[in-house]
Amino acid sequence: MSEVGALAYEALRQFLVREVAIELGPDRQYLVSSRLHTLALRGGFSSIDELVFAMQSGRRRDLIQGVIDAMVTNETFFFRDKPVFDTLVTSVIPRLFEQRRGDNIRVWSAASASGQEPYSLAMLILDRLPNLAKRLSILATDVSVEMVERVRKGWFSHLEMSRGLPPVYQKTFFQPAGDGFQLRADVRSLVKSEVLNLIRPWPGMGPFELVFLRNVLIYFPQQYKRQVIAQLERTLLPGSVVLLGTGESMLGLSEKFETVRLAQAQFHRFAP
Ligand SMILES: C[S@@+](CC[C@H](N)C(=O)[O-])C[C@H]1O[C@@H](n2cnc3c(N)ncnc32)[C@H](O)[C@@H]1O
Image (cartoon, rainbow, N blue to C red; front, side, top):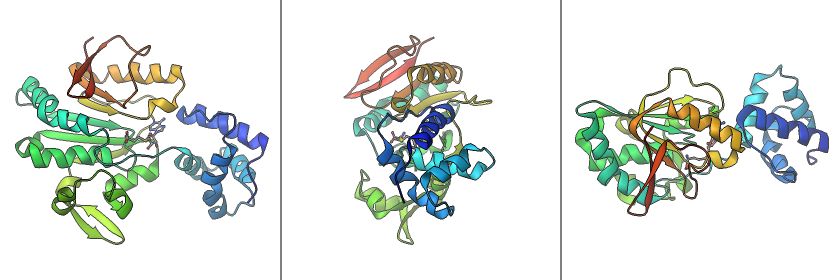
């Protein structure tokens, strides 16, 4: 199948910024071609341009979602930024429970990809703070329908299992399933997974005590980053904690957070 043409490339670039705030640079034609190849074949299109123009007509919601699913970057792994998880379990989460005095803690993994992030937290809680597991709920969301379905299944390939997961956790929390492993039902039951586009309104979200917003805003233009943080602030309580990816910061996005550094990990505490 030939490479994407200039007109289709421009149409796709505008579509991705408008729909999901993802900015494609000017020279990423190879990326588009490799990511949309299978979708074009599966849909019976003779070229990627044909797929893009069919999607652009707006009549095929399935194509729109298929292109979004294919174009987002889903890179993730278990216990990504390990010091963050260590500090969460040793100090941040116990402190949040103290503040809530008997109430539940609601966690949101916004842009959870295939689920390694929310499930790392779920396993850690079951292992290290088992008495608190009943008082903690985790919501995982992503704009990709394919990713949301994966989180619901809690299934991971051998390669995914080899990235960041302690072997003892594999033994304790997973069972072999098909050509990979599935999380035990009690771990899966801690995580609820929904489709949510961060650049659209989020009616009824929150309040959350802890939010993972990691490695997603890096793809967004500045005005969308600000819009997401402004909306996020409305879902937080004073003292709620937000986690960004390593190298990401609130600089230029909001002044309502204080940055706290604890044992090589960085947290953003909501202080309105
Ligand atoms: C690189 S992954 C990050 C996964 C995880 N948070 C981590 O740090 O390992 C980025 C995720 O953001 C999602 N995403 C991209 N644009 C989005 C949007 N507008 N709304 C919600 N999720 C989005 C992608 O589908 C992808 O799964």
